[in-house]
Every structure is written in structure tokens, then in C-alpha cells.
Length: 503
Image (cartoon, rainbow, N blue to C red; front, side):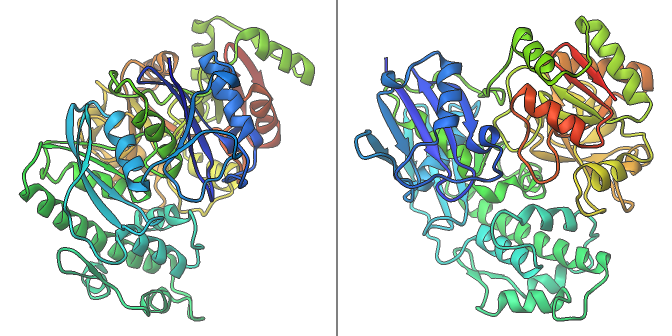
């Protein structure tokens, strides 16, 4: 039986995945175990720590690995190891298709780390075929990254700050933004002065604009790129093919774009992979060369390391911290009581999420009704800009009572309209109506139970859910990470398995 390890993240966010018999058994990013945020791969070496994690999870030994595969040209591993190289956009497309619930789909890739800004693929369970889709020059992802740099957010991995800023806008600058970015169906028209013009418009030439003015500018540019994406997808759909769509590439971390596409009606169903960025390509790479084609749909986001009660207790005892060990019911009750009091809770359960967002196993939770939630998270815990908002989690069947949006948002990949925005105003620094939402179906089971119990006690079965980490560090991976973040931040409670810690 082939044991294939996929590698990704040459420049940043190095990641590994292990596949056997057409199934992904484990995924882990290097930063989660080394605690060095965004760390990439050192040329000529392997990400040993992450590989150790996935081998343990898959119960395999290093000598049983039959192949390494990568869809990034910058990755170099020890010469004696077998490395298969794939096209970068092919790796993105494989990640999206083979982790989707679709037997057949059109796949659109938008990223900025290849010569092709946009590519289109037709895929089924037998393989992927690149479509003859003409595209010239930079794609929407590259322009979006240039916008982030023009706003002074840096030029690598800071696009989420534009999205957060744009969330405050109300469309006042949409028409003006259209004059900056032209589109003729196969090419974006942006001149070499684009960044300078945006920087001047945003007031970075010494005449700093107020926050809401900058937000309107960011929102206008985001809306313009969204309109271009819709036009692009209409062109793709007009060529025929299946009515299912997968969208992937770093641009689709942005939930404004993903939601706009999902609700456009151009395709009947839209899927966004758990991690659409470069780190996620480790998954598609490992599946693409496996001799057995993937047979399972809807890949789990919970494929990282996990720790049993004996291991957790050993860490807590070694750290000499006080704790209570409770059964599941008591854990739920104690956590609900803390959340009702407005406390911040670190929630550590089961296998770690491998995507970019916490989904209920490595989460910090809070009540959406607490008037100080946003301040506590932004100022005292995450040390982010005061205008940053947070996603929420709700059971799938309860979501229609409070939100309007796509049918599901399992990976918190879509935004929803709040039916009663006043319920969620503590999470929004200005009066807006949209939030990123995770819909919880069956997994994770204990988190789902907590949502139900909190809803019965509060009348609102919704919790604020952000990643369990401290200031500028990766999501916690081990119980020791959780203890350190708990005592080093403003968290009030930590639940690590069935062990409860309080300050």
C-alpha cells in the first residue's frame, strides 16, 4: 500500500499531508509544532516536526513512505528522497476537487504565486483536465495583494486586514474603485501606478484618512474585484460543463468573495476547500499521485494531532497547575456558566484543525451578547485593530433562525446576514449586518453539545469562535501550548479535554 506525503509552503506556512489508499489520514502545518508563525521550508530539508506528527497519526514509520510530492517549484528536499513535482495550479485544483462532495465539477483557481493568475479545470473522480481558458497578466489575487500593500499592510499574507477593513464599508466608493481596475474578459487593466494611486487615495502620503473613509475605499476595491469575479465565472459557465463549482487559491480565504460567488446562482453548488491557500496544496498533492483515486467525500478538517487524558494529565501535573477533571456533562455545564458571565474560554478537544480557522477543537469561545467581547478579544487577547470582528458558530439546523446565507458553512467559509442585527452588535464596531458563520452539523460532537446547552441557557444558540492562540502566534497544537496561552493571556478558563483550568 502506497504511503504518500504531500509537501507545501516553500516560502511560508509549510504543511504536510499523508495519504494512503486514496484517503488523507493526517495533515499538519509546521508552524503548529515549531511555534514559529508562518515558517516555510528550509531548502534541502524536510519539515521533520510536522512529518513526525502525521506519521504518528497515520501509525506509519518513516521508512514506509513510498513517495513525496509537491506542487510548488521552490521546494527542495534531501536528494536521496523520491520527489514528484506537479504543476502548482493543478495541486490547488486537486485539493479542491478531491476534498469536495462532488463527483464532477468545474474548478477555478485564483492565486498570486504562479505565472497563471487564473486557471480553469474540469474534474471528476478519474482526474483533472485543464480547460482552454485564456488569461493574461496579473489575476484578482495579485491585485488584491497589491491593495493590501498599498494600504501599508505589507505584501505577504496581510490581505485579511483589507477584508476586515472593507467589512466596515457600505459601498460609497464602489463606482470610484471601478475606474482603477478595468476588465475585458481575460485580462485586468491595472497600470504600474496602481499601488501608488491606492496609497494616495487611502491617505498614506501623509494625509491619513479617517478609519471609515479608509474602510469605504477598501470596500470599494473589494466590491470591484468581486464584480470582476462574477463576470469571469459567467464566462466560465457559458462554456458548459457540470453545474458544480470549486473555487480555490489564496484569494478565497476571503469570505466576501466566496459568499458573493455562492449566492450568485451562476453555479448550482459552490465548494471552498478547508484551506484554499498554498498550505492546503499538500492535501491535493498527496491525493493526486496516489494509485487509488479518492473514494471519500467531504474531507474532515480535524486531521491534526490529538492527545489522550493520560497525556494531558501528564502535562498539567508537570506544569504544576490546578485543575478539575469532569465528565462531559459537567464540562458542558461549567463552560456554559462561564460563557454566560462574559468570560473567555479556551476550548481544546480532539484532533487539531488543519485549516486556517478554528472550528471547535482549538477555539477561544465567548458569548455574542457580552458587551465587552470585542474589546476583550481585540485589545487584551489578540492585540488587533479595534475594528476587527469575529466569526460565530451555530448548529446547522438553528442557523436559519438567525441568519440568511448559503445552505452550509462547515469551514466558516461564508458570510451570513443577521436577521436581527441588534443581537450581534457587540461583535461589530459599526452598525453592519454580516458575520462569518460556521454551521456545525455532527462534528465536533462535544462542541455541538455546548452550542445547544448554551442556547438553552441564554436563548441564543450562537458562540463567538476564534482561534486558540496568543498574540501573533499559531493556533495551539499541544496541551502544553494551551496551558502557556491560558496563563499568558487574558483567558478566564481553559477546557483541555475533560480537564478544566480557571484563574
